[in-house]
Length: 376
Image (cartoon, rainbow, N blue to C red):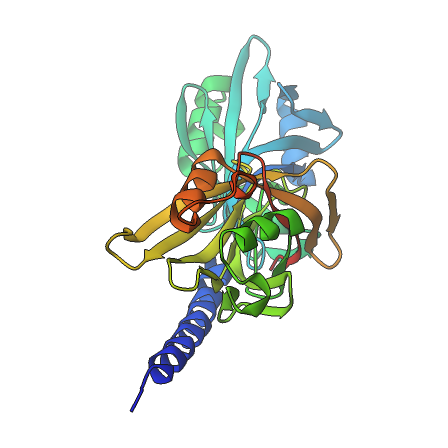
């Protein structure tokens, strides 16, 4: 009695379950991850009591670098940071700074960091870095792909008021007091890349010319020679769909890596089988990578590991970001074969006397791919 069908079914079920487990495992980490921040604003609106104190002392505030001081507002620009947009846990580094001046004396306050995890504001005050103020009770909201938050009060620390008072030459009753409310704090952070949720799928429409080359090498393209590995599906030839399992992407698709589960199997009757599993589209390097397995082993190597196989060509592709729904869509991008991938495919699938026209070459298209990715 033949049992050749059972292992194949079992393997398909195992792969499908593995994909499901991967999706479930990803969900908590997606919510906890912090997005890299590369823009936005941080505003400090001085409290009237603190403003009157400085006015009575004759202390002036001026902006440094990219910071603008307008009325009671000190407006800084965010340089970098890490922030979870769902709960605004993380930190933000700001450009420039501001200076408190009294006559010929002054104290610059630069390299300001707002840290919501430590509930504090850190800065270089004069020549040394310290905790400038503490914050609490902040509220937050989503703002497109990013987020904003506001803390109603920033309380100056003892070390901060001591250094500021000493640098300005303030004596006795003129000195600033620890715990004094300096301002409120408002931050609106813009992410460099966003974290993706495990939903939707990337669709590859295979290139007919490339599929024709496989056919000339003896791969029965329309008869199961090219098939999907669950949970990927192929509703029809030459369309293949790979569920998105997570990753990151810039809203303009200039950076990040979109991860998928499942894969594709290319089998030559009476010959080799190549499996391409876990396709990842790296928009920073503009390449696609996969886990490759080539059998039988020997003579083939078996598990090869993750390899780069294609260049992602976005010329002519359509890229659209929807901040309101937090989605990024890429349509009709081209996956063009790299030289090593072409050579490997020729080595694995060449017939004893292959037709020269069947040989893969650098730049052959695997096909056009499209997806809509959902940011958290």
